[in-house]
Length: 518
Image (cartoon, rainbow, N blue to C red; front, side, top):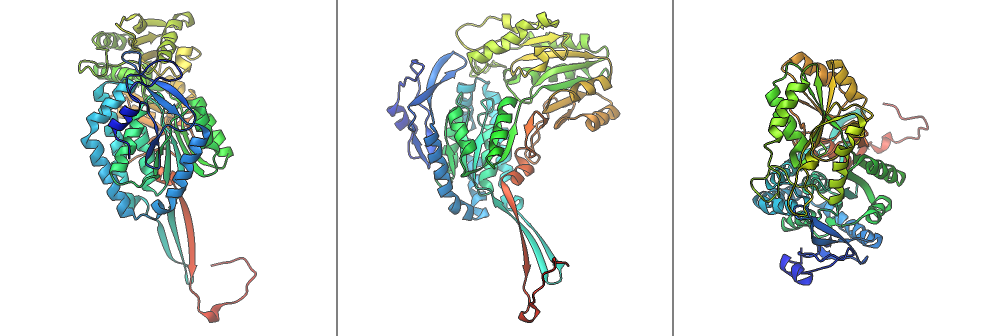
């Protein structure tokens, strides 16, 4: 990048946005063609420090014209990048991995400052993103085609992979580094050029990552970053130069992204919401199950698409398991993500805080029992903090069960049998992740066989695949048919081209109006 951090700070040390609040840090700008730019819209949005509730900086929001400029820049960079050797691409990705790995504390601090998650969790997010960078360094293997000799007499057939073109990557606030690294790394490795549109709530990590790619030698225009709201997104979905769209977010928006992109002839993968169930069988180790439930439900304040939000207790296991969970949550330390003692940080915005607390407050009126009410926990200052909540006797039909809360709220649904648990999960509209805790191999196998969910854990509460596999759910958790990162993502970011070859002698040439046969 041509602008240094010091130059950016000098340009806007105390910028004020449309909200009228002064910020303590520099504006966050777009990165187009290797240059930072404020764009043409004149609009900005506040970026908060969730731990204090104060505006930390403002992010410039792109106009449709700004996005079109970024797309044209990516289109101009496409021929040269597509022609770049796979060995060169792999070398750049190795450099990217080294840069990010060596400077992980710096990137983690940026994530914590804008998202709020604790530093160790932010560093873990970066590590999981780097798994995909590692996977993509093997681009020579992933881009291999196929060859068939003598498919017919004197005829050979081969199939090759080619990039789709300009790709739009629209990423969520909850993983501002990991999800971009899942998308953009594969797209770039496959020879595409990219427009990255991160969440405007925590946009700085995306700019940092773009700078890391540039430092590693990625040519200008191959990776561009635009910030924005619906105006920017709609331009990406409708611009004819954009050939594919990747998205992670809520189910209503995922559906909109899918339908709009497909209507404009684009390839699309849109990952939506989740309601992840964790089944605990009577034979499970209850201490291990309680540890797993607390970790998976309340880590990152529940702002994970793979967080466990429903605990399904089978038989008589509910009461002893709930007691163990209560013992553990009473000892949790909630505070600023920068404090090494904190185990959980704040929510991303005040609106998120109010929405999450509303689910807990409404639960008793629906017939549920609030066992632990985190909304009553007091925190000093104006940060977006809430305590963890545990709600028992939850049933389908209650908002606390039916809707994606995306906060530190764990619901307990009691069922009588294993079959009841499977039926409950399979009738839920979401199918991102699920888990079963048991000591019985037959139960685990039956669960794996019968459950209609994309990612399954056996005594593993958050079954996020390692980088050599692909991530994605079923039903309303995924619109499209291709999962993210790993092997499936190379299928998404490439097109197959089939070439049939014959080298006949001149004497063999003849006119034949019949359908070709072998």
